[in-house]
Length: 113
Image 1 (spheres, rainbow, N blue to C red):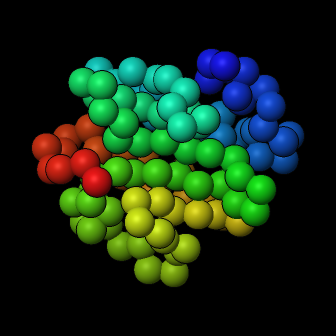
Image 2: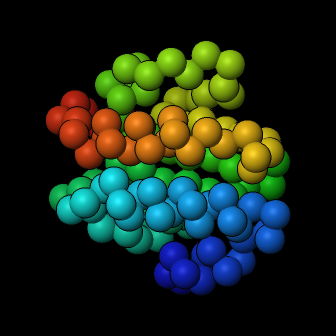
């Protein structure tokens, strides 16, 4: 499966926002490779996954795997797990925050968790 096939299988009510997330990833993560890893769209730099997203049963998950990036942003009020932000509703996704996290990831040299 490739990312286009993954996106085609996303429920219609989530597809538009995930296409926007994908476009932001492609724009902000220059030099990264887009692949399917762990059964979700992932963005690798030098073979290491640093960003991923998934449409899961109960929510949309966005994975930012550099701890320094997550620590540098105010995520208060969001459902945050280790390395991920979960959204129950597509309309709740803050694309401005996502863009900032992606730009910070591209600039980061911190460790990947």
